[in-house]
Image 1 (cartoon, rainbow, N blue to C red):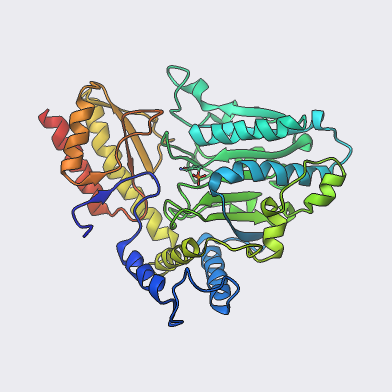
Image 2 (image 1 turned 45 degrees about the vertical axis):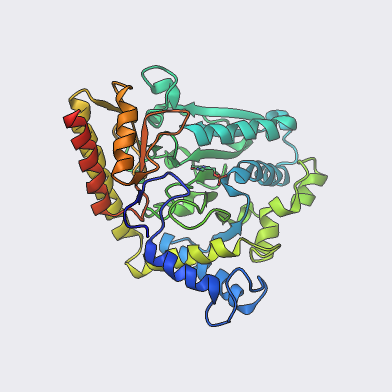
Length: 406
Ligand code: PMP
């Protein structure tokens, strides 16, 4: 029985209960085959159909244009930190064999733990072949203490490398640990500035949407080289990474290697995945199955636009309650207005000795997974799709009652 518990964890995280019940049935007997989804062949017509359905449902939910392929990979978002460098340095070498590594750049925007980690992997891999890594902006420079992630960079902060010498530009749309998120509308100054790139083809813009995937529409999706995310927040169980890749990023890595690009393991080549319909080797079948059920459930309820409205309201409820407590000097919201994540709300108590009592109070009320990431402390409330407005109201009440009575 799950009734008494509200899972507010940052990921893996809550999934809709009725979807899990259906998934449990498929685990025993998938679509009347008499075999469970984890027992059938990944080359069976049933699983082929599942892969096609998942791809089509995601394409329709996110309005993915035909210029982009949807690929299903393994290794989590962390492996993309590596594979993106290998695939895009290969692409750059094929396009510009005359440009030496010492004059080639990859650009990262650092707004939190995950983009920082991605940039460090970029430094390892690109650095090992002499390619330059440029931190185009680091939002810590704009925080009060100079070392916290409190916002996205201001629009005039970005120092891009020369476009003709840049293999890709990278950012993380929602920083799960810190609670920093770019705005989705280009009309807002805290959006990622797509318009600072002339034609939005080169350099390709790569974005990690792991913790906001399917939480709201992605406007301008055609402007991206690649959008990707691990499944284990809004979408499904861990094990599946979804890549939405512009077709010109699918390149022959062996041909690039002959020209001097790094050698790329075949399983990490996006073209290998695409050429084999994401079935080069056995894919994470159960994760894909549950992800399909979740995606279909979203589609049946009207898609991402009503979901965006619901998610907007939930974060309004929580930040609204926190704002009041902040005004009373009880807590501090870690992130500034405009850059606040809808999915991961982070705050600290101004009297840290209260944190332990609060954690106990939340536990007693059945709230789980609210402790902040060890690197930032305090609390983090994750408001993924499976959290309802009623759940958000409960959290706001628990918070307000605790702080007003202690
Ligand atoms: N990027 C973001 C935004 C994340 O939230 C996470 C995981 N929480 C990762 C990357 C790393 O994902 P994985 O554990 O799937 O490698």
